[in-house]
Length: 216
Image (cartoon, rainbow, N blue to C red):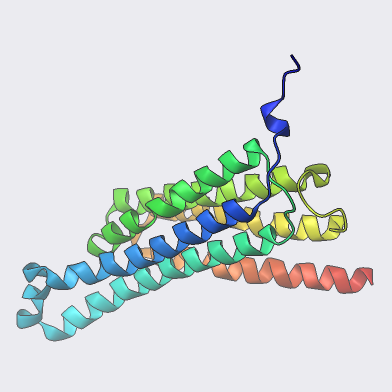
């Protein structure tokens, strides 16, 4: 009887794309719900009676952190959607890398809820950074594996396009590492360091466009 290498089992990417969209959608809903649940906590409003101005300022900081987390999830979805349009088939290895990526996406609402309650806590920030790092890492590994020698992607995809997406994907885990360094130095600047993710992706995209124009 002929044995079959599990890595050679190929399937269409539509099913994986469906579960990816579902996980992202549920994570975004849980992200919003976890923030709204704090409004039902009696202690949440206790500081308002003593100092309304400070209460509003504190809530503004929490909302800024919440906005960053939502932005991250949106960016992860966007970069995943951008690379998935080049995927023509998937194998077991790619599927399991993608499922690990989705696991850490599904986990994201939990550190988000903690960051809204204890935004300046060292361990909360570290938890958030670790989750962000693994999201970026597995997202990068999925694309690297799929694009290596055009293993799972369209043959028409150029080497320049592959390299450009590689650069964009590596920004995410690198920002998580930088955010961890900032956390170790001073937790007060953690939110500012997280802004480097959208900034980094924009800068890398602009550099890529300039290189493509120069090549033409």
